[in-house]
Length: 110
Image (cartoon, rainbow, N blue to C red):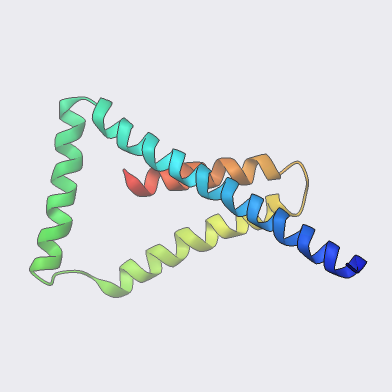
């Protein structure tokens, strides 16, 4: 085998390891979100249920505001991506990026 083939193969292995680590981190955050819903108080469960019912009734009645939802979603995602990019350009920020990924996966599920 040539050195370039060995480097390419090693690079693929490292990428797979990184993707698997991030995938496992997202799964852990989702499981934590599910467990969090099982542990919260009854009043908070009713609050979550009420907001989900309101959301689905808005979809059913076609009362969603698409433009404001898009602007809100873009604002949130661009902000998070900018923070990840700023942290990602330094070695110190790598654990913070992992924490942001964990928190984002947790909050998207709950």
